[in-house]
Image 1 (tube, rainbow, N blue to C red):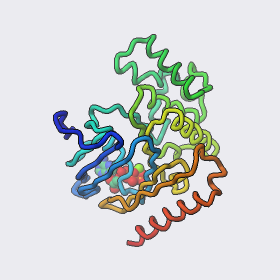
Image 2 (cartoon, rainbow, N blue to C red):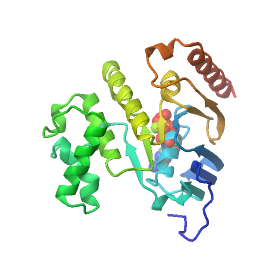
Image 3 (cartoon, rainbow, N blue to C red):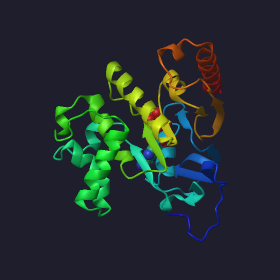
Image 4 (cartoon, helix red, strand yellow):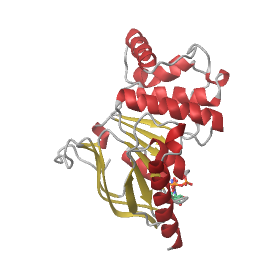
Length: 263
Ligand SMILES: Nc1ncnc2c1ncn2[C@@H]1O[C@H](COP(=O)(O)OP(=O)(O)OP(=O)(O)O)[C@@H](O)[C@H]1O
Ligand SMILES: [Mg+2]
């Protein structure tokens, strides 16, 4: 991409993601102009902002899926093309391969890297044991519920041991019940793996619920309006939703968002 291996590290080790002077336009319309962002390691970070402000574009640029016009992005002090990333797409139906078993879907990134059959099998088995997954992985995607399919997508994103996991609205194609299932499982994975996660969500309470930090973005051209910490203990449970801390942080985020929308 636009980063050279010879560039010195621009981020200290405790910083997971560092963005400096990022600019991006689509068809002459500026989306990001000289955008800076620094995110700490080990956190669950939610991204919330108005429709079309560039949330998906932001995680797509950080994860290297789309190019930037100018600026620098690093993950754990390295250029993104030397980093291992995991990405969970919004729509599990379009992202799983229907002709492969769940097991083969999960193992796919390892096979692409050229890992031997035996090692792939060991790695997938280790992954499902670590995260306590009880699914018959010989079955094909269509035979699972939506929540189970999204869980399979998450496992596929984790299988190659990413340094950071990106999720673009991972619950938006799920019904309420399966959202609760996937959300709990995601939290369990976060707590077990201590893997930094960056999740775009379009529901403010959903953004706060799992987060250590909520990033609130502005309308275009997009800038960071606020970085709001949420320090409730984990695991977060339905009781979290009625805790004074949750109510206060959600309200604070809503006030900031509404003020931004009035501008
Ligand atoms: N490949 C592209 N070509 C042209 N315009 C694009 C492209 N990708 C995104 N855009 C535009 O950039 C803006 C931001 O898009 P993006 O999908 O990042 O926003 P978002 O915040 O994720 O939106 P939503 O809330 O709808 O998911 C939108 O106006 C969109 O139309
Ligand atoms: Mg989006």
